[in-house]
Length: 87
Image (cartoon, rainbow, N blue to C red; front, side, top):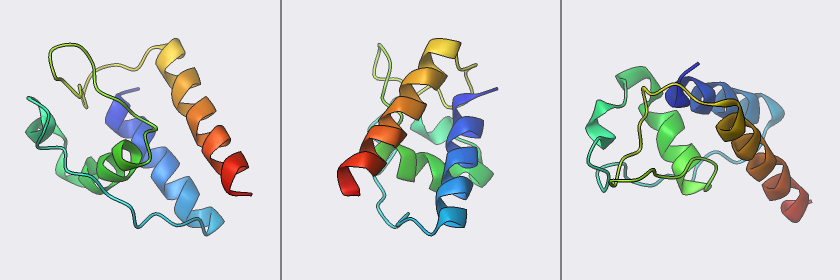
């Protein structure tokens, strides 16, 4: 599963739960930000703005790179912590 696929799944889940998904951040600051698939751009902008997905070495976002188990765990933990803080 790619990083942009994870962002898309979490974005859709957040919308389904009625959470605010209006926050966005530009991906153009990353060397490979333009490599994000069109269908995943909004989700990646949201996930980056919410600090769920962070950059990698070399100023890369790696949207189409395979997400490791550790990355997925970190992303999910950030989402849960974010929701706990807002509760």
